Length: 138
Image (cartoon, rainbow, N blue to C red; front, top):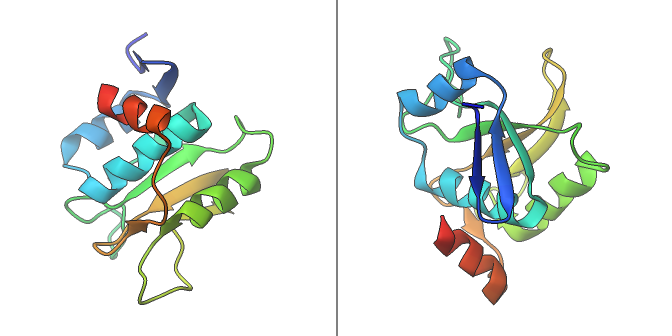
């Protein structure tokens, strides 16, 4: 299947060819790449449902490099728990603690997990040695 790539012990899926094209159209922000890699290793069931998207207004999905990504929530038993885990380990912007890297919401296209980063996004803690090896394998 064109929209699946097996990497190590986890699988990244892309919803469809339109989403795949959106991921390849413009570069992703390096912090977003780091965040999605972390999510794949930590939670392993990652289906990307949205990447770059021009919306006619300022959005993390429409910046270049794009800083927003959507992942399917229904693959997780507890999507809010996944969001809480991400936000425990990632800080969107230390100067704006109310902003989060992960949000579970429905903006009219169905519930999903929205991931977003800022130039100052930081991982709060380091991954274990095995998790780091998983990222290095990418």
